[in-house]
Image (cartoon, rainbow, N blue to C red; front, side, top):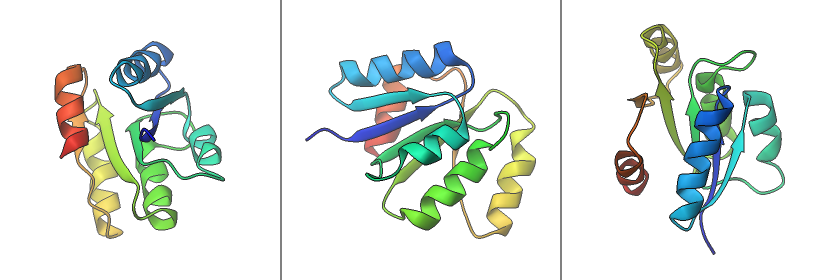
Length: 118
């Protein structure tokens, strides 16, 4: 059974592209366009991996990651962002006891696959 991956980002072309690349590499990847939809998609079956943009309308990727890790501690989370403003959100998450790495956009598919394997 392939790993179930949710790719979350409000820029649909980026989320769709990443999901397509992952499907081409044999993963069960789904693109979703906001944090609330991604959170709902985690039930009844938790994903193995969430790849989420940080800055999104409504629920940020950091908020989504915190909820995911609290409810599904075995789910790996990779965050990505093209904005420097994410540092404040990352600091706030760390104050809450969560340590997430943020990958810079754009990310090369080979680099993403390497991070997933790490």
